[in-house]
Image (cartoon, rainbow, N blue to C red; front, top):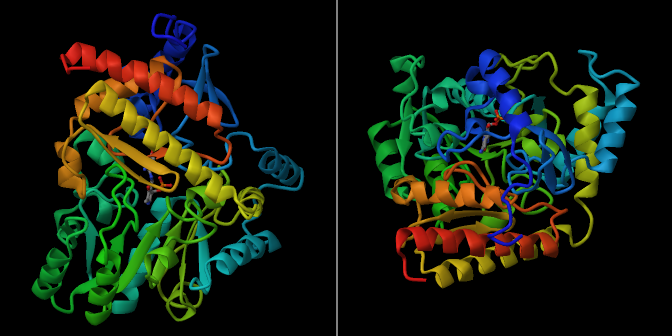
Length: 444
Ligand code: KE4
């Protein structure tokens, strides 16, 4: 599509009409804030269907999708095997509120892939998983404080809503009203990749910290990789201080390899949270770890956690169908190679356009930050030119490429993106960046 061609093929009249109705009855017209595109401007999308790596909006525009439902759709939209499993299970009942063998099957797949998770509990959202893991850590250690990292996002449970990434960062919300100050005070925020600060906060709160919770590869401040030995340092410091290490793999679980990234990064958490990919696009999340810890959860122990639809057979079938496809030899390597081509191509287009930027990337995850400086934590990410990111997002969307509608999210390459998709993306990036360079007087 050349710059002179009409942008999105159709005026988005239907989408606009639907969104106007949505705004009357859904808060902000959305069911999750980032979908409102507040930080990138332009009109939020109304998607009618998805297929493979593409989404189709209410006006029939085709979009190449790099959001992938925030990482869940690693196998693309309407994956045939997942759709067939859901359709079949729908004929046999979607939720019984009693255990089924399907829960055992999905739990077995996960624990075989991640052997240091000896026992697991399914829940219906990543927030429930992280919230429950923190409650368990507090229950086991009988301590109240937790340590999290500025810019990391672990869902919208009260204890996580300070200095968080993802939607809060997008909306510029540092402290969330409605969270009791007494509770917020129990969450100690330190910069990502800053072990001395972790040491300090433990020294200042001796024997009071129940857990450290961390994204092993941050993806909610944009993608920020752990610096060498950061995670190993967290493991040592938490162990030394009698605190649990909770590694939040809601994004990274089964994203970069079939299983956990922890083995790749040389650590083993006490508790691990999972979500997104393990549900195959249907609400499934989980927390798990050593049996001696998990056995503190009801009904075996006193730490209470429950859920009406937890482990429901419909979701289990979708998760099983997803994980069974992720064992395909070479699948992750091909995704990583395609993602690398995207990143290298973007870097050269940025250089060609004379626009300073960093691209943080690992495996099929990446984020473009418009800054000349490295981005190693949330402070660095916030200092990048988020207005230029918003412009880049809009220019790319106009050309049919749907990137994350926030600087503080990741771009996901899936197993169904193709070389042609990457080529198309890079062509759109060239035009978008040249338009930006021309407007901002950057020498081309
Ligand atoms: P959910 O409650 O949204 O299923 O999961 C919360 C969560 C926990 N941990 C990590 C590392 C996460 O990334 C998330 C949720 N991710 C965001 C996007 N980065 C969800 C998108 C949204 O909030 O609409």
